Image 1: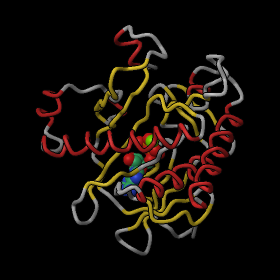
Image 2: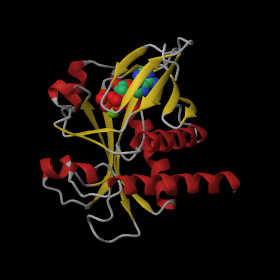
Image 3: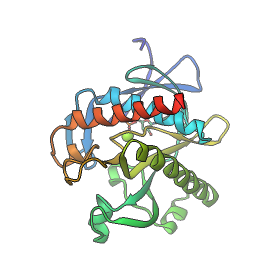
Length: 248
Ligand code: ADP
Ligand code: MG
């Protein structure tokens, strides 16, 4: 990355830089880890490279399945060249299995399979603690029109179908994940941000133990140890599967 690159924004996990092209940004993936709305902070050595590489591979693969994404290129291990978007301030969460805040808020048991994929919208606002929104709160906030909310939901469900199938072939269960979308220069809604062990709950199907099977940021949230090796395992299985698909 050239030192003259203009830093536009530094988030918890990435730095966004301007490029010579107005419609392209360079995102730099850091090793910084945060959880519980940044109350817990730490470093996961090598995370930036893994999240950038895993995200790049998955976004590229989703693009090949017809999902419009911001991915352009991965010019280096920690850098992703993306289409500049105006981020929609919503975190779109898809859940296949109950875990995390869903269990805390509803009493559903951790690990319980949901009868259908649950799509939830959270307001992307750290100061407010990213609250869960209801349909009516969404319409009152008027962030985007209801037809576009429906479009986000349909994209989220399609992405879930593709990712579930993909992770299954890696012998990983896709428990849940968070997506961010934005408007590109032509005002189309496209998938942005990242898809990584930071933003997905991933359980190793080859492991029965409820702690050992965790291959995602819950290892950091819950101090389960062996975080780096879990992230490496995800990267290794994802890249192996991508290679297989290329050659088939
Ligand atoms: P956060 O602390 O909000 O999780 P991150 O460090 O993960 O932030 O990412 C930095 C910022 O980059 C986030 O606000 C994210 O929404 C934004 N972002 C991701 N992809 C794009 C894109 N293609 N164009 C513009 N902003 C983006
Ligand atoms: Mg983020």
